[in-house]
Length: 297
Image (cartoon, rainbow, N blue to C red; front, side, top):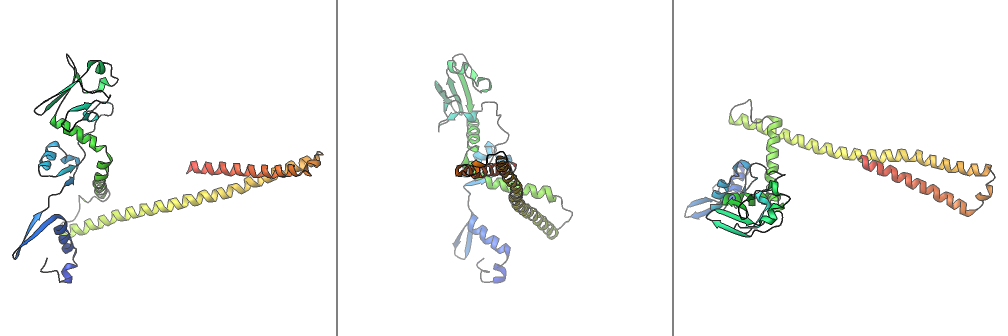
């Protein structure tokens, strides 16, 4: 890199820029004399697919100081009580069950744990049928190992906002790659050779970008059309309705004059009442039309 840093033709290449980025972000470069030693930085955490989320992999990564951010394989049953629903201490001891009862005592033997719950509480519990606690002679017992405890803690962590925020980038990339494969069939190309494969893959990736740009443009245009249609239809409908209101008020006044109620037309209070009624009817009709279109859209 030092040898070519003054050559603009090489420093402008994408491969050179990528190499510089890798060395800066993922490596520790130390110089000893005329030679440079490169050591790969150990990441603090790694986002991976659920296929690599086994407890064994997480334990091996933990020994290297790396935390695996991944969903566990399988799903917990919603209708049953899972070990992740219990509360545990930092030492792995059970503090409380999902029903809010604390154990009478706990035992720890090597990598196995046992929590003893009062029979009076467990025998009358509403969630007893789906609970992993087993009945014994003196107590109801919850038995689990270190591995089961770690899995329960991880399942609890998966429901937190912190995990969702840290894993969302991985989930977004997975969705993009899946769409890339489904829509373009990039895994089954009809060409051979590095150059031809690269060219075909770039064109297919460009196709995905065009699809996404079109979807965004369509959504923007659709929203504009919906707003325009709502305002246009409201303006078209309200005028005939207001004309009908005016016609009805005028008909009422003429009817009163014909039937010798002409004296009322001379009273300012009656005219004021007529004007207010007319405005009130218009406001009610306008509100009804607006609420109708709000519900439709």
